[in-house]
Length: 79
Image (tube, rainbow, N blue to C red):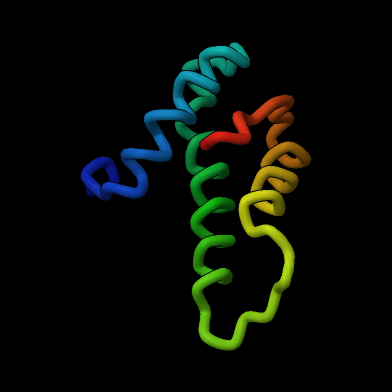
């Protein structure tokens, strides 16, 4: 069950309130949550792959992609 997967639980804890804040309709929230999770999970998977060479900031690239693809205006830089 995805809801008992700890990394997803942490992600969902912060993503769901954001979706409410953005007034994403309840009927669309599951789809947007899945899209956002797939993005974050995919970036994390690439970051830990053996042989991945990227000298940039993984957190920043994740923020940039989420901002661009999900209209996320502000993300707390402390999280």
